[in-house]
Length: 196
Image 1 (tube, one colour):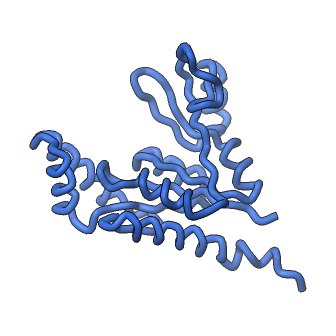
Image 2 (image 1 turned 60 degrees about the vertical axis):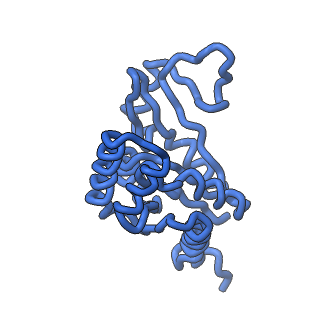
């Protein structure tokens, strides 16, 4: 059985990464999404496996210590991350996984999963990104903060395999779709399936 791949999409706030992922999911029938895991307590009405898988703190620490997390972060005193086992199960079933992550979390996956594919979604210029923020009626301070965050992403973009411009969401979606198709046609991905 052919294996799928993990595709990690990252981009500054306002670049439509989520829209691109939704569009690609509509175009393909080989995409799966991984439910994130967390150490926080389950809230009333939540169901384990819907939105999050919930772990006790001790379970979480064991998972982290034994390399069970592809990436993780802490927010508001709680830990969140991506399970290596869940990703590998989907990939081994022949399906592709798409993750939308901030750059620091994407870097962790780059260190932990060397065959993952990294796609940076950006505007063609910081000026265009700034115009997006202005259209959303953000304050000057908020715009400056977000532009500075975008600059940091651009400056740390060396590990990405592809860059896609999202000035046109439909085109960006088609390009990401084409990347996924191209990756499935790589020699190493297909050679083992050739019958001699």
